[in-house]
Image (cartoon, rainbow, N blue to C red; front, side, top):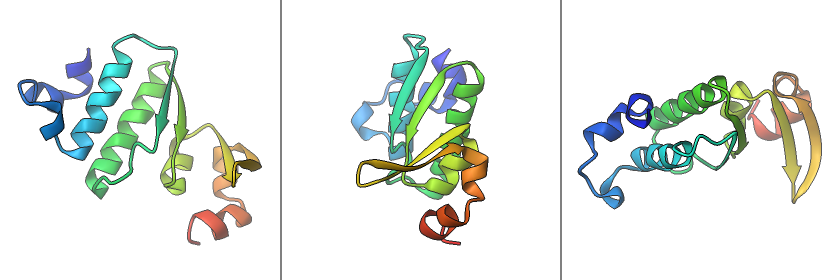
Length: 119
């Protein structure tokens, strides 16, 4: 199941985890978590330090994981990417929720655009 979802990991199955690229290491971490068939998975900054190509790939994988029925709690600095795949969103400032609601509505919120989406 994991190799089907992450074919790149099958190509690297004989390689030590520490020698994988950042994106491949993120895929490995997700694959390990998904092996237990969780109802929910928590991801903390899965795009941190990745090249733009891997960021897009990781977010596609997160979206597919959710579509397959696993709830995803995503903590992410890349607000535009996170809001584009989320159903619900919470905006935190110094540990306090300052905005919450439908992700698509928050993406169109002027306050969110100005503060977090560079618009």
